[in-house]
Image 1 (spheres, one colour):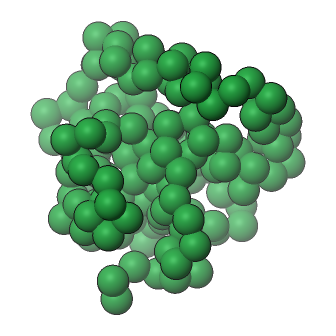
Image 2: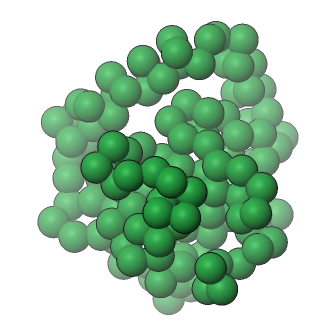
Length: 138
């Protein structure tokens, strides 16, 4: 996939979810080393990445962290890996790895299932501001 930067970690997120969009904004503010790029699960590039790594869009409505040519993570594993890459204070969040992934993902799924009810939903994917446009894949 030639249009994906090989030196960046790609975060795929639900582009119409208010919680997800807030989380992306949070990561952008704290990504001091410019590690991440972003795309929505609903975008063409998001769909290409999911197909490339063998995840059906119908079976995933979760955050996915894709490291081109290396690995991918989803649900709580993706959140913990993102925290690890952000470094500093966020590294403390990785302590949750002591909780078995099945339990972490059960809690993650509970929040994901209720995210639209609790945080709302947008009619369309977020359009990044001109200064943030370089952080998003088209």
